Length: 298
Image (cartoon, rainbow, N blue to C red; front, side, top):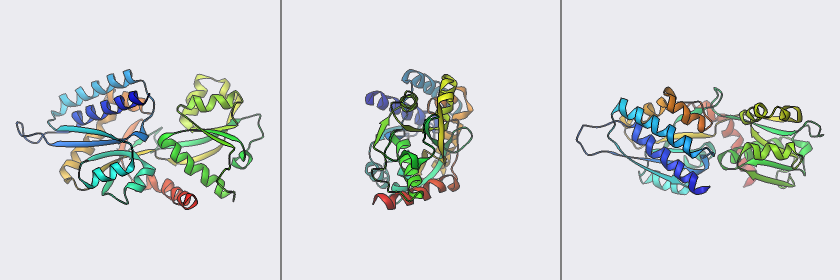
């Protein structure tokens, strides 16, 4: 599975940079554009569908824009590696989780430029789900119970949100649940609760809606008892050391992702709808929540 993830991410990065970057002068030496992608942002998708959609979109943009840049892409598994690459000017564009941005921005010169939208919002809403027949009414009633949640970037945001819910009730965060299990897919979180194999789970609201559409019985048996604010999952950030002209080209090209059929297919595969300009207000909520969380875990 990890090998498949790496293949997909590399395919996306290579085709993305080949497709969206414009030329200097015809015949001149191609300019290298280095892009990075944090592996924590990756979500399971069908590799065959993704590869086809990415190639279609790349061919379309290449035909329309006529690029001649030399792309290089790399997957980064740690924030330290990303920080070193940025400080050594080995990266022009990096896609990272929102929480990782707060850490990286303290040690490297990066600027958030773009953010994806979900259901028209710049991020996800997370929900805490239990069986309707249970006596669980809020986070307090789940003390000592079993909870399931996704991993990766979503898992980090969920940890911040759930910990702050517990703190608001003046309860200790450590060992609050008897067990916290990490799963890969929303169905792997919801179905154990449905079949009474776990007490609760956290998923995105959009995932819950999709699962209810696929299995109406879920609507009859499961209910959300806590709802998070809108929390953005990831950001596309520019190295501040690149020229304003190059920054404009990269940002403008990336924003065209939703303007073609193939681009929309890619966004659908990555559980997003559009790519829009970043605004500081989009991350204020998760920024404040993370500050509270960091004080607890330190």
